[in-house]
Image (cartoon, rainbow, N blue to C red):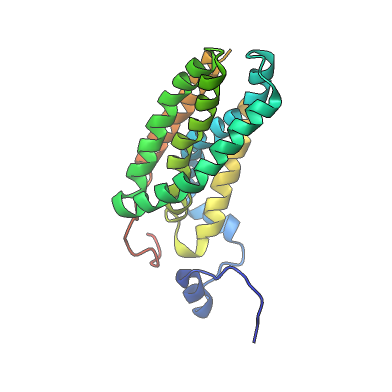
Length: 217
């Protein structure tokens, strides 16, 4: 008896293993069969990923050099934001189960695009209380996207190519961000990424509460 702990495979994947329908080269197969979904998945992630890097990393440069705030103050605000994410991410995932992954993701995308301007407005007051609140609130729109994101993207791919397709979409988004890589200009960049996410997500199918064990046409 194996007493070790591990993550169980999904029922869909276990069925594929039992039926010997696992692809030998799933990455190549998904590129060949579902290139549209890979591109849409990558673009849909832009509105979530771009702000995450800005709110996590750039805030230290902006906060210390422009706002003249101590790093410990900024770090405390980020830790507080992270604690709130422990709640907002699973709640967003639960809401996507109930109201649809695509709908919640689009709501998060719109909120992300708008909040970038509010965020820098709060930071630029130079008032520590507003700066702290802006940083703490910054991850809520992001979390509304991140909660349903894994299921939304993975379910777009046929079962035997699901993990390869989702992974390639994620990594392509990172590469796009790295290649593209005064507050309101950055807020405009966040808004642009959010618009890209909204458009891409609009073209993604929504498989909420539908059978995802069948092969896609």
